Structures are given as structure tokens and as C-alpha cells.
Image (cartoon, rainbow, N blue to C red; front, top):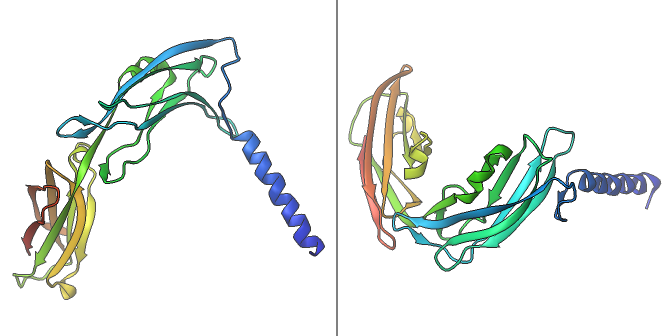
Length: 231
């Protein structure tokens, strides 16, 4: 090993331990003397049935940011019971003023994950008593784009939105084409089952929106769900 390689390895190891030491999650008990035990309660369920998901790990981290390296400390951890409910105690360090709590759970396989973490400011500690996560069962959806018109346009694109995402206007693009390439096409993806999936269609020419329409359907698990779009 030449001297240059040796020195690079030493620098890498030193940097690694420096980062680990400065950006750490302290799991030891609160030692500031300004500590408080809090209740952490909530649920993890599948909508729209409301069925709870059991044995889901839940972790709460108290984060003090704003310095060169963020400091964090585990407040507590637990699991959901057979009904998808979690209820455990944690200890917070009240000297972490003005910072926030992060409540996290793992992404759930075979489910549409809307959100797997939530954050609350430190003064919202009572919010930790009602933290609820929502998931949806997956359902397959096929969208058939069928070219039935002869019009000229600059762009045509199709988006879809899940029920929870639709609340704040978030959509996901699933199809895009320009006039010279316009033809029949098929796209497949997974959406939420047993609730409406909204399909948005837009067409533009010379920068002007000449078509904006929305369709929707309820997809089911283990069914060949499909929708045809003529454009």
C-alpha cells in the first residue's frame, strides 16, 4: 500500500467517526434533570375498512436541530397491538426547546403507503397522544390510452391521485406524449383499493390548456381493473 492510499484511508476513517460522534441518536435516559414522561398513543390502520395493522414498530425521536450537526434522542418505542393501536410511555428532555418530535413506522409491504412519519413541534407534545397512520390495500390498474382523434396538440398527459394525496393536490404522472408520437398505449400501476382513484387528463397547444378533464373509478384487490381513455 503506497503512502497516498494509506493517508486517504486514515482520513476516511477519521471523518466517519467524526460524523458518527456529531450526528448521533442518543438512546440513553434523559440526564438533563429537565425531563418529563409523556404518553404516546395512536393507531395504524387500513382504510376504508379501518382495520388495524398489528405488530407494527413505532419509534419516537426528539430532534434538536439548528446547530452544525443535528442532535437526536430516542424518546420511546413500542408496537401496535392486535387492533393496530399503540400506547406506550416515553421520556422527553424539555431542554430541547423549540425543536420537534418525529414519529415513524416502517413502510408496509403490500400496502399503499401514504405517510410513514409525522412531525410535531416540541410545544405540541399533547399531539403525541393521537398519532394515526393510514394505509390502503393495493389494487392493480391498467389504463388504455386509445388514439381516436386526429387533432394536433403540443402535449397530452395523464395523472392520477390517491384519496389522501388528493387532499393537498398531489398527483403522479403516468403518461405523456406529443402529437407526432400520439398512438395507442397501455400503462399499468398499483393504486389504492376500495376507494376512488382519480384520473386527470390535460391537453395543450401553443401553451394553452385546451382540455382538462377528470374521471374516477374504484379498484378492487385481485381484480383486473382497467379504464379506457380516448384522446
